Length: 134
Image (tube, rainbow, N blue to C red; front, side, top):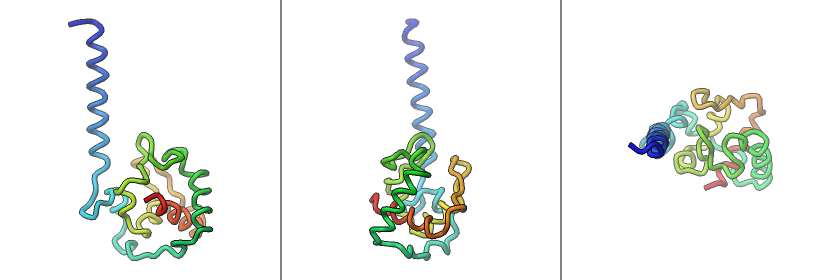
C-alpha cells in the first residue's frame, strides 16, 4: 500500500465517523424537534412568549445572543462542533416554552450551560430573537 494512501484513508475514516456521530446526535421527535429540546416537560409547550413580535425584544435578544451564545453557536447561529444549528428545523419547530426551558436549564451533555442566571425577561428576549431566524 502506498505510504501516502494510508494517512488519506485514516482521514477519510475519521470524517465518516464524525459524520455518523453528528447524524446520531441530531435526531428529532415526531414533531421534528431536536430530541435534546423535546426532553423539556410537556407542559412547557403551552408557555407563550410574552415578547413575541416585539421589535425591541428582537434587538435585545440579538444583543444577548452575541454576548452569550455566538461563541458556540456562531454569530450566524448555524452552530459549530457540538453546538446546534439554531436555524435548523429541529430547533425552529420547537415551541417557545421549550426553547426558554432549554435556555434556563441548558444541556450539559452537549456542553450548553444553564442560563438561569439571566432574568426571565432576558431569556424570553433571547427566544424572541431565535424565532426570527426561521
